[in-house]
Length: 177
Image (cartoon, rainbow, N blue to C red):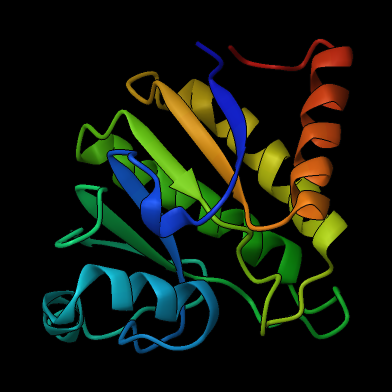
């Protein structure tokens, strides 16, 4: 089994132990993938999120998955992109690292990520894919209990970006399987 794989489709239909929500600071739902996850999970998700007191950029918090096929949702707040010089790359990497840590801390073996911050937060898609793949690949050494990470692409362009980044890491013999 590939440790990191790419899948194109709707993250709310994916059967992974945990899916990651690209949330806003309130964690109470919003647009894009955040709204889709909240709608698919049902109102209990919002009720549990109310008890979490929001989250800061880069932070990750766990809830149940409720009506989703996933058992858990890990909510993380990605950075809003300004110019790339305001700490955005570090903040985006923190989303992936902290989500993986939460998964490992709760003995979650499969976790699926959307393309964090590439929607309304306007992170450039290519740079976001590079950060995602590099950070996940490097972080997996610290979390040997995680068996598989799924990079969920909503469209073919995002899928291609992820596949290109994974191929580059493998070609440079830096892939941690």
